[in-house]
Image (tube, rainbow, N blue to C red; front, side, top):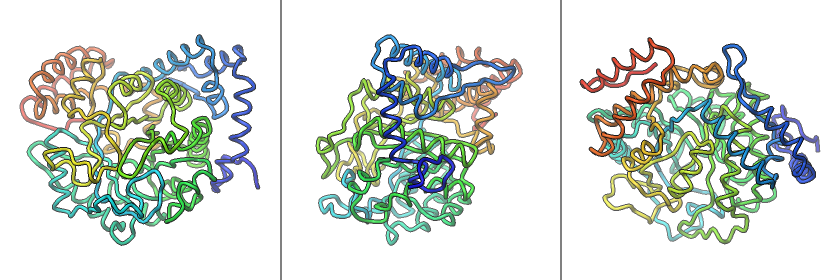
Length: 481
């Protein structure tokens, strides 16, 4: 074996098994070294250097040491630092999105997913373009502007042409004041040529969960199908970025393997993308194994408690300060509230994880990919965020203005987000309040916008935002900085 090489294009080099084992051994050996841990925490604090907000983040060994630490006082400081970093780069904004399941046809044999090929109890369904239009209208009527499309891997039923047609359909639907302004894509690993097609179709972020970075465990969990090729799957983000997709999203499915191994592997993957492509992942998602048709989470013996889950999110926020972090409706309201404070910057709302779920009056369960724990409507989620002091944001401005990849990171590091993302969030919230909100949500949302206007630093931007808010009330839409 070549050994650990962060710049290598080979999966077994940049996710080197021995390096992870050495990292975990290092963390165990030093987890009571309070002086060393304090130095790491000091290094990770955000500081202004001239006009730039600098936050060094942590490498996988440093972050793994924090995760292993059991000292209550240090753990409290880890949480406080995560909150400080979250406020520095993302303020109190939370971006909202919804998944849209196009098809549950799949040729893979993944043991943790009900879409696996051998499952004969789940009805198979693939949306037509007209059905996709209907789903998009239903999502627009809820108030959504950003979707993440999902489809099983099946070259016959879900070829790249079907995905591209679906993206075109989604962007074409203009219903009342509704528009989907950003389509993120979560589909199977593919070729550079097909990633170029996705780029040309105008996708936002390409998302692909690793599931587990432990090669042996990965191959056990993926016994059949194209996804069984660990290297092809793990190297997918390099092919996507080679094809020109600036924004990619990583994630593991916590509960499949040991969480400390997965955490180290996840950060090593982020470091690899930064080293090779000059920019790390745009987002990292934090799903846990949940019940679903033909799937019992208790069969996987690596489940993690809410307390450990909280610490994973906090340590990740410290390690990758500029990266968006996502939690879905897999988690309960209580867990999501905790996660928002620890570092999460994007959540789904009003989600349905079944194919064709949004046009059904009652929530269908027969084609769900996983059980949804937070079943509140989007309006209930928006009102909850506002009452908890967060700004629900439907903003898609950076993607549409070309501020992706390293350009987004430059904006983040310059501290200009308060003069850009903050007013954009307020304007998209105003759109939601005017077009979709319940009377109760509109009252609390209007009060929040008035308060939050005062925190826009640049006076000129603040006044322009006031003007745009008035224009939104008068019927105009889609302003952005």
